[in-house]
Picture 1 (tube, rainbow, N blue to C red):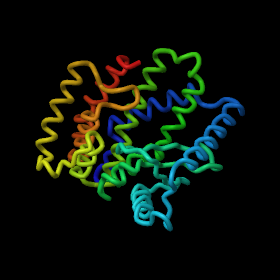
Picture 2: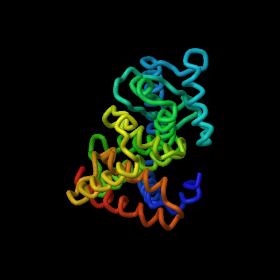
Picture 3: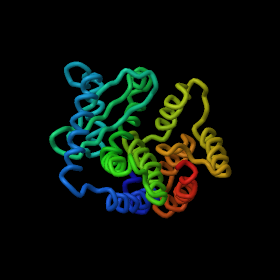
Length: 272
C-alpha cells in the first residue's frame, strides 16, 4: 500500500519514535529484579487472560482463526502471538505485548466485536491491535509504571509519556488502515465501535462524514482538549485515518498530519 512508502516522513511516526527513545532511556530495566518483574507480569497476564478468554483456534473457531492469520500475514508479523475472545458487549480489543520468548503476546477481541463487525471491519480491529504489538507499546508502558507508580513521574516525563501513548494510538490506527486498505471500511468500523451504528443503514457518504468530523476536530483543538491520557478523541483518530488514506505523497502527508501532532503535544498537559 502507498502509505508504507510515506512512513519515514510521517510526523506521527517520527515524533513517536523520538519520544520512545527518550522514555526508554529513562525507564529501561537496569537490574535483574526489574527484568524478573516483567517476566512475572507476563506470566500472570498470559495465564489470567488465557484462563478467562476463549482461544481462537483452527478447530474451534476456524473462520475467525484464519482471518486473524490473514491479517497477521498482511502486516508481516512474525512474533509469537495468540488470539483470544473475551465476553464483553462493546466493540473493542486489546494487546498484551510480551517482552520475552517464554510467553507469547496476546491479542484479544470482544464477543461484541465479533457479533457486530463484518469480516472486513474485524480486519481493522485486528490490524490496530497488531500495530501495538509491532511497535511494542506495552513494554515502555510497563517499565514506566514500574518506575513511577509509587513516586509519580516528573511533569516533563509524564508529558512525554502521555504524548507517546496518544501518538501510539494513531500509529496503531495506521496499521488498521493497512490491514484493511479501504477508508470506507475503517469509517464504518469507527461508527460501530463508537456508537454501535451501521453507517450503511443511514446512507451517509464518507466524504460528508469526513467534512463534519473535521469540524469536530477543530472544535476540540479550539477548546484545548484532545482526549484522555491514553486515547485521542475518536474524531481526531478518524481525521488521522483520512489523512493516512488520502495523502498523495509524503510531503502532503507530512503537512496535513503535522497539525494533529502539534495539538496533541500542546494540549497533552491538560490531561496530566
